[in-house]
Length: 549
Image (cartoon, rainbow, N blue to C red; front, side):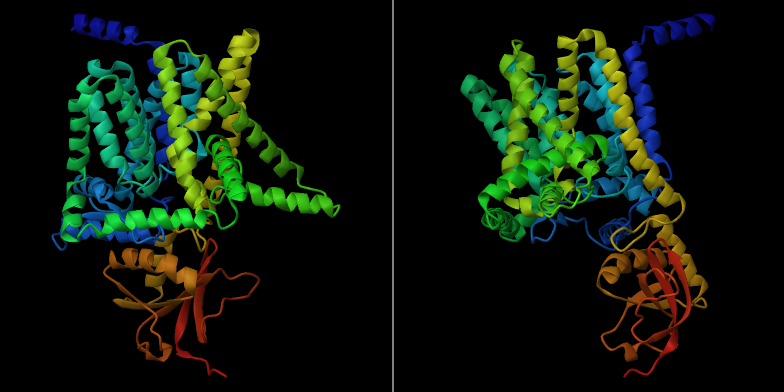
C-alpha cells in the first residue's frame, strides 16, 4: 500500500509545472462558463425550436433531421451535425434548454487546452500560457460558451483543423493518420456549423491540396481519406440533397452570387475599408470586450466624430481612444504576422505562420461580399487572431528589451483581464438582479419567472392566449410556448380578429416594462395585473375590451 502511494506521489511530482498551470487555467475557464448556467442561459426562438425538434425525435414523434439550421435570412440550410450533438446530449442528460447547450460548453472548454497547444507551435511556454489564460477569461469566449447556437463550437473545430493541416503541411507522407482524420472531422463538422466556414475551409483546403500534391502526388490516399470522412459526416445531408435534386446546394451558389452583387452597393472603397475596420473591431472586442458586442460600428462612429469636430462639438475622447488603440493593435498584429513569416528560418514555424496568413487573408475575401450585414458574431472563426497579435507584441519585447518582458506580461495581463472582468461583472449584475431580458434578449431564468407569474394569474387554465407587437411576438412567443408546454399549458398566438379570442380563456400581453406609471398599448384590453421582468412587462388582461373609437 505504501509503495502504491509513493508511486502515485512520484507520478504527481513528475507532472510538469506547465500542466498544473494549464489545469488551473481550465478550472477558472470552466467556472466562468458554468456559473448559473441554467438561469443565465440565452433562450431565443431558435433555441426553443431546437429543443422541441430534439424532444420530438427522442420521443419517436419525428424522424431524424437530415438538414439543420437555415442560414440567417437566406433559404440555404446547413447540415444537421449540430442537431446530432444536441440529440446525443439529450440522450445522455435528458432534454432541457440547458442540456441542449452542453455540446457548446463541452467544445468550448476543450478549446482552452487546444489553444495552448496551438500557440505552442510558435511561442514559448510563458507566452502561450499567458495568452491561454486571457482566453479562458475572455468575455467574448465565455458568452459563446453559455448558450446553444450552431456556430458556438467553431473555436474547437477551427483549431483542430489548423493544427491538423499544419501537421500535414510539415510532415507530408510522414503525417500520422490521426492528423489526417483530424482534418476530415474538422472540415466535415465545420461546414455544418456556419456558411462562412463552408467557403473558408474549402478555400484553405484547396490551396493546401495544390501545394501538397505538387510536392508529392503520392499523398492522394491521405486526401482520399479526408474526403471520405467529410462525405461520411455529411451523409444525411447528401441523402436529403439527392431527394431534392440538390436544390439546397444550388441555393448556396445563388446566395454567394447574391452576396457578391450586394457588396458593392455602398461603393467598393467603402466596403474594403469597412471589411478592414470590422476585422479590427472584432480583434479588439474578442480579446478585451471593448466596443459594441453586436454590430460593427467603428466606421459609423468615426464619421459621426468627424462631423462633430467640423461643427465644433467636442468628441468622445474615450471612444476615440478605443478606436485608435484598436486600429494600432491590429495594424501591429497584421504587420507582425507578415514580418515574422518572412523572417522565420525554421520551416515548421514558417509554415505555421504561412497557414495563418492564408486563413486570415481568405477570411477578408470571404466576409467581403456580406460585409454590409456582418455582425461581430461573423468573426467567431477568427477568435484566436488577437491572441496571436498580443503574442507577437510580447515576443517583440522579449527580443528587443528582455529586462521588462515579465513586467510587460504582468501589466498586459492585468489590463486585459481587468477589461474583461469589468464587462463580465456588469453582465452578471444584470442577471443577478433579474434585469437582463429585453426585446432582443430572452434569458431562461427570467422566462421561467414569467411563466410562473402567468400560471399564477390564469386560474389553472390549460390554454392561454398571448398578444404582442412585432419584436415581442417574434422573440418571446416560441420560448414562452416551450416553457408553458412543459407545464402542460398550451399557448396560442393572438388571432387576426381580437374579438374572436374566447372570453373564457386567459389572455396576456408581452411588451415593454411599465415605467413611471406608463404602460404599453395593450390593443384596447384593460389591464388586470402586470409585472416587470427586466425590460419586459407581462400584462394580465381582462376578458372584455374597451370601446374603440
